[in-house]
Image (tube, rainbow, N blue to C red):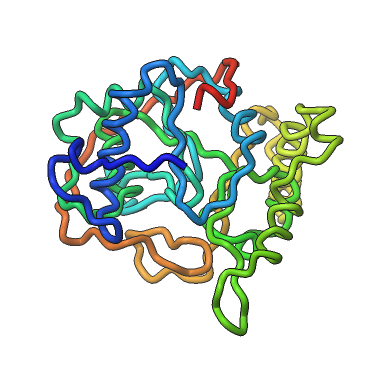
Length: 289
């Protein structure tokens, strides 16, 4: 595998252990400079399991010529009591983030889109950059920041997985367990023959799940509004529930781990007005990534 020294692009020596924002900043600059024919940049951790086939299928559902910021959406600093909040959404890097060339080009011209420190959490800082640029998160239920056991089985059954973060480890030694990790890949990420024969099966599963959510909501005791049309019902799902939440300003990661604190950074008040990115079809292949 090719290894690239990004130090020169960032201007200072980049720590390989703590320089998350610095490394991501250098990766974005490297992409703009050397990959002018690529439609997307996908960034994942080195311990992320990934289904390339399903990833390409997801990217094919978007218009690659528009600014896109795709992955599992989290939030930070949102307050229900405020109409205009300084909070923002961001995509968790462990589950993977897909950026269109247009989004990266806009970011490269943004004077505010810098790293406060080289070790600033890169996923949260990228969320701020996209907020500055008015590019909303396109949430995809197949991207996962954590391991399968941290998600409800219904979600895993109805949204074909694109990624999972972290390899499985031995309970006894704490070391990576290759066999268990392969079991996870084979069960959740390996594309089965019937899925290859019917690529539309992914969308069918997701739509069935959304219908189930709507039906469950109407069965909770509340009388449905007879005048409401089907289009009024919510067809979106939230990120998987976490085991704990200790701050009203933060959203916990699956499994109870809180997002890295950025209390040392000033969180500017940001204007509202995010727009929805259109998602017509676009042809993407492995060579486009």
